[in-house]
Length: 395
Image 1: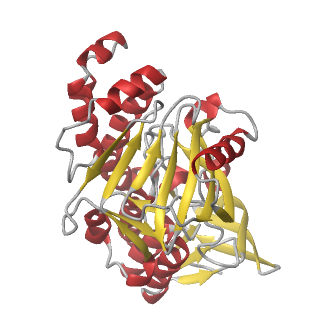
Image 2: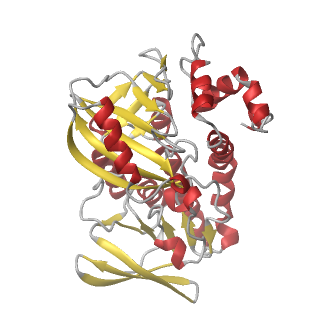
């Protein structure tokens, strides 16, 4: 099979890259190793600000499991602070049905002209005379795909990045290790996303409850990889469930990892671009990556359209993508990486003080950056003690 662009991985970043490249007139193939796009779900499925998603794509009703209008933060000493936004405001979030969402984006790529191949696993890459050759297994049969340009959107353990020798493996401190249950419980508050902090609850991370409507919720945990041992995420999540949600019925379980490393040195090479988790574009502080992956996918697809049409897919020609995402997404990732390293220094007493300092403050319709600014302005002595007194300016 000869194409202009091969996109490996049909998550949000890959599908949007395939869509944008196809819309520019290129012959595009989108490969997904699993037989069902969107399965299994390895995601908390949350988008913190509805307007961010609506600005990028036309949201379909069946993509949304629930809309939430606030966040509740729980400190280690069981204090909690609720932040509520107007129901008609832009600050509320979506909890997605990722299976429908991912399939919907792949359908848009197909409608734009991309060829979608499911149950197709890329097995290796070889570059000869300026052309990439992908060795793949498509529904049990060998398939060779020839393309001048490859977009790697194949997740945190990206084989494309490894084959192209574009990045070292992530260190434990650069990964958030996660486990999550889909649960059924009558006591779930469907209005709020909830976050539970504490070094005994979730070392270097947090537990979340994301309501999905109909008495359902995603309940998960993310731990700093350097502060975790094999099996610990599931053990701590079970402890949380026993303590906080003893009557909940578990319907599904998933586990995985999220890059929280900050910026990669390079996400482009001759005939290669990386997108989403493969490019370490997730938020180092929260682990969220859907919005960044979609944005980066569009940028990569648009860059592909120009590069392939001009006949130049060199690293220099693909630097447009590198420059675009680093000047937007990249700046946010740098800020969040600094904030992440700050929070890793906090004791439980520090966390109690930080969350308690939000009582009585107006934090409605506030994004993560705004919330962090309020936290830090309320606690300047803590910044000084930890040696990061200029962190507010750097956010």
